[in-house]
Length: 158
Image (cartoon, rainbow, N blue to C red; front, side, top):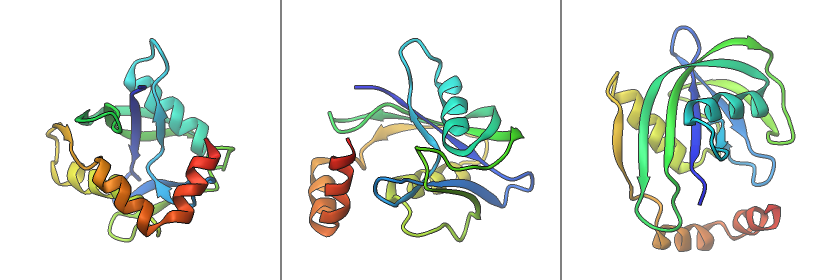
């Protein structure tokens, strides 16, 4: 199973975060994705932000490292990033991209990314390191029951 890297891209004042609306299911998420074989997680985060949003970013620091507890989860890295160039644009991996206030994230926002964002923003400069216990078979079943059309759209897009 591949690992994942996400970029937490904040405005200069730290009040807004870059979000991407996925074209397959319509949920808003933090920009990021899979780490290619041999690629450093920080490089993957910068590449994924560029692919999904058009922005060139620089990694400032590692904010979190989540380790999987089952086969559903992936090892995941969150990096604080700052924009250094490029222009916001959509791509095949994004339906919409924009900055939003941290206290007014767009809806629907993927619950796991919302939790991670809350966690890393409250950790200040400390790196969050913990198991990824939120990704479970029970939670997957609950999501399928509550959002069957979203789940089917997600599976269909694979």
